[in-house]
Length: 272
Image (cartoon, rainbow, N blue to C red; front, side):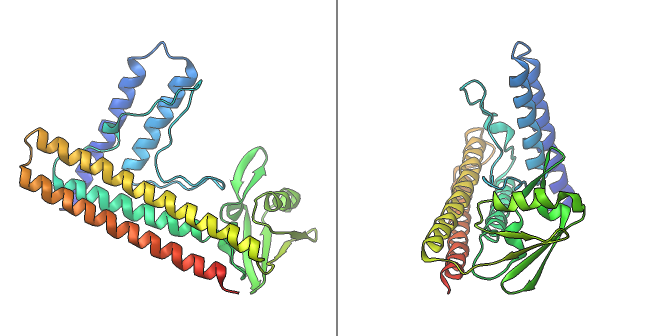
């Protein structure tokens, strides 16, 4: 597929997502502001997803898929048509491969934040600091270096935030104790206890499972899209079956890769 056609397909998805979302807002003017805000936010999330944007900003709950918004006990969900619109099996395959690849990359990034017995600046990637009322990633407001295999050094660009940075690290759940000397923060990386290793193994497995769920969601979206093409007589039965088979193979390959990534991280955690 040419780059020009790829860009045309992508813009078509973005336009459809935005237009459908606007229709949701326009046809339900009686909804309370919170509901309309949630729908608008969901539309923005879908448009970003169509552009290939990836968000892993939450330090506590990494997200592989566009969020759902819960208002007054209900859970409105943007129709699946907003997530995927394809005109051929080839486009469905392209979409599945792209989204599954990004999911695998996200799993890798999140596993890097799980510490082992050696110093690694990536373990602080999900730490956020309350910076004048705004939660800000630590690595955006401080330089993080590794002076030795058992120590990290954090140098905030704004020295007045030292206490806030120290507090954020303590409350991050990483089990680290920062030492603030009034100019910089040093973190000694202790050897992992057996109990702590077991906790980290559970985190590794949980991240891997979230990634596999996301991959299977991508499979579901594209399988549904291919079946709709067949139902609309846009493609034949044989082409539909071939497409479904290729989607399943891609899913199996992606799940296997996630399992291998998690197994490698678990080995690092268990290495004394």
